[in-house]
Amino acid sequence: MWANSLLSLLPLVVLAFAQDCEHKVKEQLVAPPRGWTLHGPAPLDHLVKLCIALPQSNFAAMEDHLYQISNPSHERYGQHLSNKQIEGLVAPRPESIDAVNEWLASHGIGGGDVGRSPAGDGLTIKIPVLLAEKMLDTSSRPSKYHVWKHTGGEYLVRTTSYSLPKTVFDHVELIQPTTIFGTFRKLKSTIHSISKTPAEDASQNAAPVVLATGVTVDPSCNSTITITCLKQLYNAVDFTPSALNPNTIAVTGYMEQFTNRADLQQFYEDQVPAAAAVHSTYRFISVNGGLNLQNGSLAGVEVNLDTHAPFIPDIGTPTNTNEPYTEWLDFVLSQNTPSVISTSYGKWRDDEQTVPLNFAQRVCQGFAQLGTVLFNQHNAYAIHDHYGAGARGVSLMFSSGDGGVGDGDPDPATQECITNDGTNSTRFIPGFPASCPFVTAVGGTVFIPEVAVPFSGGGFSNYFSRPSYQYAAVEGFLKGLPQGTYAGLFNPNGRGIPDVATQSDFFKVFIDGKAFLIGGTSASSSTFAGFVALLNNGRFRNGLSPLGFLNPLLYSKAVSGFNDITVGNNPGEFAQATKGWDAVTGLGTPDFAKLLALVTYY
Ligand SMILES: *[C@@H]1O[C@H](CO)[C@@H](O)[C@H](O)[C@H]1NC(C)=O
Ligand SMILES: *[C@@H]1O[C@H](CO)[C@@H](O)[C@H](O)[C@H]1NC(C)=O
Ligand SMILES: *[C@@H]1O[C@H](CO)[C@@H](O)[C@H](O)[C@H]1NC(C)=O
Image 1 (cartoon, rainbow, N blue to C red):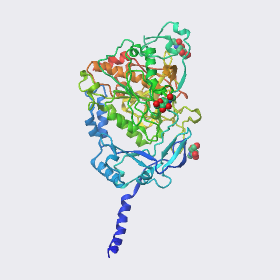
Image 2 (image 1 turned 135 degrees about the horizontal axis):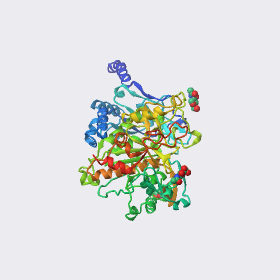
Image 3 (image 1 turned 45 degrees about the vertical axis):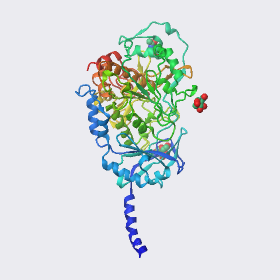
């Protein structure tokens, strides 16, 4: 009797279960990105740290706020929002939270197993592949988790497709790492070139060079870039930052990159004696086990390059197979964040096409959040009285990449401009995150007078459409292109890269006690970030808020604060430096004195 009724219930239960568990494909790649081949099945006990992004309830409203507070002709200019206000705008809907919590609980995941972003829109869980395959229905080919190998020798645990049960399908925007194939290639840094410092040459004694803009530059700057050169070239010689206005820059280090205090001290002695005299240094913050070894040759070339100014470097992630973007964003959003952040290498320059569209969009939304937020929730310690609670709208700089219009792959053997969509079409390959419209992409110049450097990354996003702030500037460039020559090779409606440029080659740095010259748009990104920090310093003195998201300002009121670069191109001549904005040097290089006057008048 008992057994009988149980049996009669069974089909119903099974049916309900089947419906509940029915999965729908959330994302599927046509093929793994070029360069990746199947290596073998993933070990079922391998732990993956999954980030689950819930739809943000009101991103459009946040975007409106961002454009208002970063538009210099808007009455709300500079009025960054508080963390709490922003969290309200990006928080997921309660139904989404409930549905996802239930789903996780049904797999025995809950409470302390789940990391949550401040706004609750990002969850992280660390689970074995076995469980991930069950939850994402990837247990059968072709969507099984596999170990993939890159031609560069790196390995990743990824799947080419994943599915979600109907109950959470619309309550989850994306889950990664699943289909994201970052090229964890030997690109621990995007340093384009490194060489020994040249012997002091005769030009040391030559007469100073007076440029068309009226500034005077040491002739040695044509072959060795120092802090003095940058101050001369960008018209900042007369500016003395106020020490009363604590000002910080963060330089992010990923993938085993870290700075060396002894090398920094040597750099200061060589180029910034005042900083050497006070033993100026930095604060190291480790995220997710980031390394900060101080012994010699392991010091990261890239970070040593970037640490020119008072700063807090090295928000790092070690080599692992997680994806660092969302971890980094969650970290930065929960901190007393510096008002200027420069990131220029490693994991942070992917070919846009190797980053799934929805993921790129989500990370880009996070950047918008950083540009909008006013950091006054924690640690008032670094904030000057002048500026009250100390708002911190963050300016984000990214190097535009070192591959011209190509994929930025430093290895010529695998360098290419080929799409990943299954058709193998030839197309220019823009870089991400530079292609996100909410960051400032920095390209490169070289020599005195300045010309575009051939490796300067540039082009047009295939993911993000052209933002209104650069509409006219980009239109002018497109009109100047030879008719038809490049049709089909790029997206003329996409966001144009870069926004601005600075010197990018022959930077003198110290590595393990020895002087070297290095080059790459990483140098440009850090350089521009340094000048933005000085602009903020000027604003703080006048009781103004930090600049925050820069681009609407750069393309409007600040255009006259740039030296237009009109000579040079990157290979293929597509991105020819021209009058006005171009896809190799953007608006040009900064004239600090002019910019300072422009940004401290309101
Ligand atoms: C700097 O070097 C470039 C390339 O060699 C050269 O064209 C330019 O004239 C030099 N500038 C000066 C001021 O010597
Ligand atoms: C640097 O220091 C770390 C930690 O003390 C050590 O593991 C490593 O072997 C050292 N490396 C060198 C090159 O001395
Ligand atoms: C595209 O290139 C890949 C790798 O070289 C090759 O395996 C694939 O067959 C090509 N597809 C087409 C449509 O040509």
